[in-house]
Length: 357
Image (cartoon, rainbow, N blue to C red; front, side):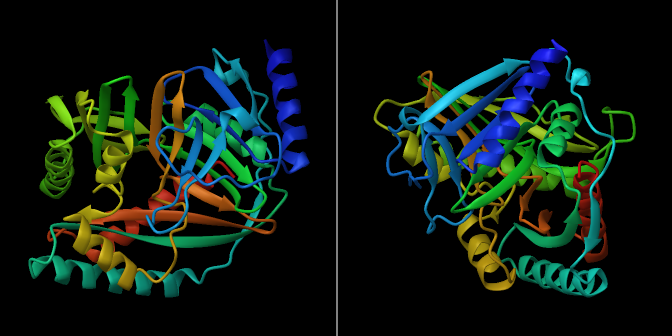
């Protein structure tokens, strides 16, 4: 098996060096690692929900969504029963902080406080505020870092995506946007964060419980017009790497007269990466966050592959450039938030991501 894994990643090395568009990904709690490689470097924009392929969509609905159409691609995969068998180099990349962290801290705390004041004036219930952190790198081996993600984030959508006209992105998302298998529908309401300290059976404070309930209630309200026979679980704790989150699973059936596109448009951006209500939260982010999220907090995954659509929110992600890496980190702000603690949460999330470099 180890030789098969070695051959697989040697083939991936060749694809990466060829500069052809590709994605390598593994869905949560699965053993199969899939590869989709486009035959040309053409850039295909998604236009309908009837297309078959791997979708990569930005946070903003005004920017084009990219698709690797299945008919334009080669596909192959490998089943890895034990991710401990991956031949992972213990040598880490050398990184230097480009961003002035102290200046970034002051700016972020000020923005979070502005957000809290906005929410306390009853303008919104929750807004997700994010920031970008830039690291200069040397000796960075992309595929080795991807292997680390496969090993350390077994219950996440772990991917490495590249297009020469767009760039290279890598991430390990714990959040499903939706799963549609024929007419069966599934999504999740994910919110709240605390460090994993060896136990999943933990207590959650009122702020985190309330934040997660905002997300659940808003999703249930949003999908009522497109989904029938809706059921959901009670909130439970899930582990994503070294972090814990509160999660509610939501199930239903997609009615025949409603399209997949309408459903995606109603769900994206989710309250977990935007806020509640969606419109004031989106406007506040656009006017105050101060940078372009690009594909961070967008979504990605399979559309109409084997009669199934599996899309995930693009969280815990980074953009990989020739000489630097951009990390994207955010957190949900409510009336009960404390600005300094929200900064600390983003620092912890960033440190978790840096461990795979």
